Length: 399
Image (cartoon, helix red, strand yellow):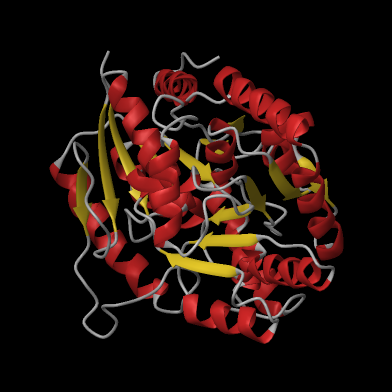
């Protein structure tokens, strides 16, 4: 039976970074199984092929906003609530899938008159994100308030999907009466694979960034934010340069490129680091193929780290801070440093480049692991199983 799924995305969908990729790939995988998906989201964002997207009205005073925590999001979410009510009143759906805490809370409150089951897609702590962005001080009244709001959002939904196994285990202790499933990120290994570039193509693309074909390249692609470990990456580059090691660092993503470029200049590594800017999601595999080793310096202890799956699918040995989320993906085949230990992270880069045969073995094992364990098709089947279980509960048949 085909299901009609309403996806609530309280963000400027679609953009070329983490949570947007998860929302998009979940929707695409559900559609591949024959289900209908409608995404309700903010006014700003890019349309994607073959996906129905309904947007809010714009806010006239803040048309060009950046990603991340912002006081303007209160207005964006109010507009999203208005649009959501209109969409619910004019369309028929079988289930609501709210992304992030805001999406879960909006769905849990506003969809109740229609007696629809509501799932929440937990991609990390909302409060932790605001702390990382400097939106509030730690251990204060505002943090306690937002922790309470998080719990309210989680309790307002019937089931929760988490982006990590660790998050699922944590939430089961907090909400033992909820169905909570670990829905780790996935990757399409047909689109993201080794051998995408010939030797000549790789050399030509590297030359566009001022990088020689035989230089050792560390690559990062993602959101340029402090909690992603960008400062740690710059500091690691400076440490290695001071030790006499020669690497190039290809840092792809947004926002704040000028700020981080200034940090690199102040650290003495402006000549080694290339800030390439935003990469369209569909160009991502070819850009990542320019690297020899991937960097995953994410500091957040609650968010997933879906970019690592792209590194793995391309067979890129990956140096990562040792968080639960990153170890869940890389398993025994990551090169780890203690969280926040920049010196250890720099040593991990050295380890990755020290032995060509080790890099080749890691590349093989990472590719095999991602093919075996991280298919979006498998994740879509789990989502549908939970949807059907929730719908059965409407007539008392849920077990």
